[in-house]
Length: 392
Ligand SMILES: *Cc1c(COP(=O)(O)O)cnc(C)c1O
View 1: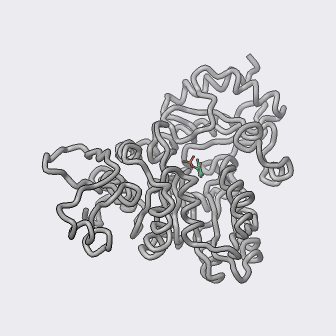
View 2: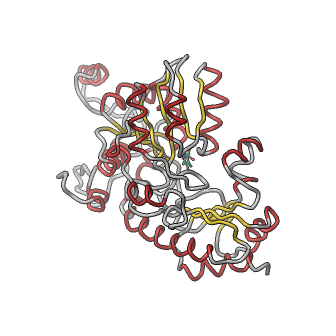
View 3: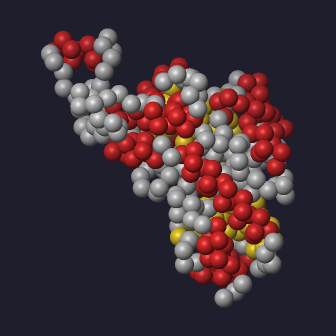
């Protein structure tokens, strides 16, 4: 594909390698292995002398199509697909770090990422220092010999804090470490971290890339050496590879990424503005609102505010649960990035397993609700939330 095509064009046309049948839609190659013409060809494939597929734990044409398409959207040299977003983060760490290495991570990370770093990597003598998502000097202060990786999610979940990617890239460079950005909330349609100096981009393709809540998937993107030598080598050996079926579903989802992200954002900003005007709502967190503490940074760094809005109710858990229990249209589920709106009470679900102390430090109160705004009519979403807010 020519480099000068726009994102929405690349999302439709990159990664298509037609078979002998000349199918128009992307083919789905459901096969675990590939056949060789001869013993010599098998040997050449295994030695790497001849490029080509061997076994779907290593490569598969449908998975490769997904990798090529996502690489084009993120402006990355290389992409490796994984079975989920969490296995993308695991592959990144296992592929690049060793015992004794040190990670600096944002305090406002996805709950399972915190558990992975705190409970699992620690057992392999990889220590993580957690710092504020927004205080660059805290990242600088945490750097030490052995620091190999800076890990951030922006906007963060659920409070939509914005981290300055360019500033963190400079900190990483000075520390001799890599900066990895989990770009799940924005997707490449709204934010391209590699252009801002990040070394690696992580995706949970389960969310906006797939976009319709059907399958799990993930990816790591970055420079060819880092991704192929480090991360792909781990993946092909250890095995958290993306299923070709899931790759195919995600490929089709990515075709509509841009128009979905535009509508998610347009709906979310309207919902956020409306929530700000409701009695009983103490605070609204949305990077597309001027009341957001990093509104200017968000405007520079991402195209629009994205689809996630969080809001704090004055009357705590009781008021929050009343809103949850009053919805009829919005789904009570922890997933996000779906076409359908979803509503979560983070303190008792996604963030219930972390300590009260960590929750307080991350600012996740009992009155906080997170809505992943879907593609329904704004009026219908509003009416569904209004019932619980009014106490009906
Ligand atoms: C969901 C999510 C993940 C994990 O992705 P899975 O596909 O569920 O493994 C990682 N980071 C963020 C920001 C997420 O929202």
